[in-house]
Image (tube, rainbow, N blue to C red; front, top):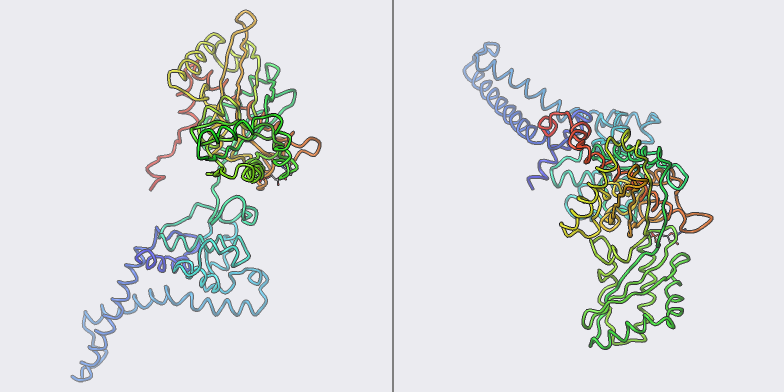
Length: 555
Ligand code: ADP
């Protein structure tokens, strides 16, 4: 209740101070108190002056003879009257003025859905370009906002009810601010196509988060140059990857090999006995049955092609790990549809089979798991480069010997000591996640996509460095999910892998996987060199530490 009451006052404030103070947080309490004070003052002095007037008439005292307290009361009367008129009266007069403007065919206002807003903000063009304009609702919107606040309109139903995704987001956002009493200023609303995320990328939107995109490169990989987009807020990361790219480029480039390409899904089914579970396992792993099973699986998509079914038993429970190629899609939806087809067939053949879940975690999606590290998931890639000794010295500011030793003690022995699972690297997840966010991948899949072993060896009699990254589970796509959104699509375009490959389905996604591995190689080289040269703390102080006074920023 308190939050709603406060929000009513704050929405009033939006009407009078549209660009200066859009934050309910910042203004709600003082306004509430100020209004109460002026109301009390106004009615008190009116009562006092009226009673004094009646007294003067009764005692036949001339009205122009005023005492000090009467003078003070008159001043207080005018002060409170002017305040209340300014606060509540201006919007009222504006509503008349705006209606007249509308009649006179003001083009700007005619196309503005907020034209009836009793507020000067409707005329303020800055609200259209401001990154986070305070919402000023027209009368229709105001009614809907109120109905969302009081719960009569479910927030999730706004898109279907209004048929306008932007308006739905804007109303939901204002309702949220009123319900919580918290400001969303800083979270932009404008400049985003809310229709593009409907039903596939994000529900109940109220805005979008901005993440800067930096470019590392050119990364010279398999004879081609790539400018790699990285979305991150970690200072140093892009600069460091860029330095790694430079060292690779000056040494003649990196090369990659795609070892495997298959997305997995593993449902769990249960039987009355372990014997029956084993019977299904043998049935599924029998090569004679594969043709029929793959025909069933492949029915669901032009691109999903079953490669294998690997089974694991836990007592009466069986985990069926299906692997399939998925064209240019990352493939989770595709593989799930194929699995569903096969399960329906198996249900007829094994009527005592109880399907517990389409995903039984033997897949394994978005969790660290040895099965992905050993078997691979998505694209398995190895990427290597030979870095010349003088480049190690001049660009990376360290020596081949120091790098090889550090790699052995940190990435291999250190990670073994820590009981690492796929974490035999310096910071693969940093690069993977930044590229994933920029290119519209599922950032939660950074868990297994960052599995990586970094190897470093001195070659050519200790002169040069051979460095490689082996990454068995890079899960990327160039169609579906977030890849079709405008900004992410632009980043894919920059890499030349936007959308479906016309010549060879799957070629774009496979190329993207090798670019991810190549970028990780650059990132590994640079961070390892910084560590070997003892530069890490120095460079982080320079790039990753804000020079701003944090206490001032937070206040
Ligand atoms: P995911 O399986 O990664 O969740 P989606 O199912 O959302 O991906 O997107 C894949 C969709 O894109 C499918 O409907 C598929 O038919 C279509 N598609 C078009 N061209 C391709 C291609 N070259 N590779 C894969 N899918 C493609």
